[in-house]
Amino acid sequence: MKYFSKLLAAALFMASGFGLAAEIAPDALIKETSQDVMSIIKKDRDIQAGNSKKIYDLVRAKVLPHFDFPRMTQLAVGKYWRQATPAQQEALINEFRTLLVRTYSSSLTAYKNQTIDYKPLRMQAGDTDVTVKTVVNQPGGQPIPIDYSLQKTGEGWMVYDVIVDNISLVTNYRGSFANEIRQSGIDGLIKALADKNRSAESLSAKAKP
Image 1 (cartoon, one colour):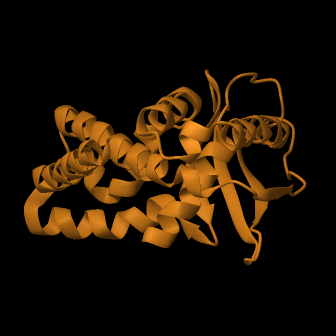
Image 2 (spheres, rainbow, N blue to C red):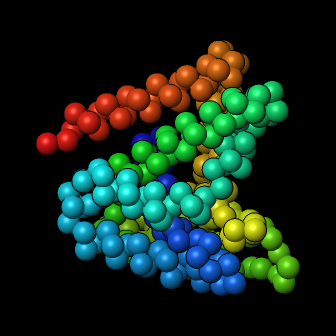
């Protein structure tokens, strides 16, 4: 899970900036914005040193507006989503969003010298659901394929799943979420996510100078 989370951190900031110009093809949008975000990280010594506030600000500004967290949460919860009340669904979305943001934010400083290869986009006129394929080249490491599932909405292209090294984000969480729901119900899953987020926040606060 730790390895997967670090790879997803790369995926998130590489995909940041979606929706800035809906008329741009998804693959072109990824390429332009990923280069911009990686440039920010490479030049910002505070982020490289682990400044949590600047990292969170970067993620909130560049990632949150362009990922479809409601759909991502619904896919991760799976068949149990319909059993949740509107209030429970909102709580799940909020806690899942916080979990992902903290996970990715804590790993961003590990990415400094990667390069990205962008695969040709297979897209037909009128398509509203596409997959953008990339490969991340790591110095001294194996190349890692990262695919993005996007849907076109009224707000532009939005990411609803990320597949890192053939492992889907939503599928990865679906199993653990289902186990928690079977054992403790939907409220149990909400509590488990909230507890994990509070623990991460506490550790972050203790780590501040």
